[in-house]
Image 1 (tube, rainbow over the protein chains, first blue to last red):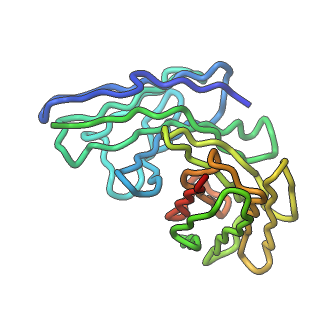
Image 2 (image 1 turned 90 degrees about the vertical axis):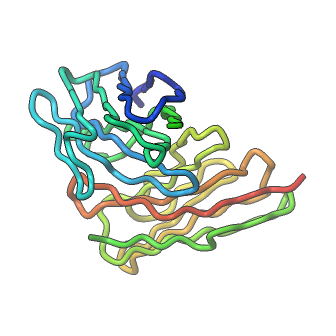
Length: 117
Length: 108
């Protein structure tokens, strides 16, 4: 399976500022996703990062708040903009290698633990 | 969209005990996975199991797709099994839905 790294692993930020999270994969993958996990909660999909085009956002998430880039098949960034304490969460990127394999299995990066003061 | 229910929500075991975790889906799923989130937040893939039965060491899983449920069996539990267990699936699109999780604590 692909090896996924995220930077930073954790950060403490002031409200009103922005943070960009990087996700790097050690091989080319077709699908990359960004998830949010609020404290004590399950995972919620923010968006699908599309290579070379705008990300596809899920209901409740907008591009102005969570801009996403995916310049190639191994790298993506998620920015959390104009942060408030409610944005304190773990942010995770995940990948699928569809359609190179017929198995639709997702793998996750180690996550970025964000605290907003 | 599909709904995913996991039970029990919380579970405390004595080391060495066995347990069964359940995942119910409101609709048919094409892909089903089980994950373990360790206390450091890392999500570890346990099984990709859209149907049938698989085993990996002390863990095994069974999915009955026609009845829209999956079971995760943990035998001879160890303290390192503690954490949150999630099941997740989708109906063929790109959006994967996660259950609320089962929080497991194994006492030494």
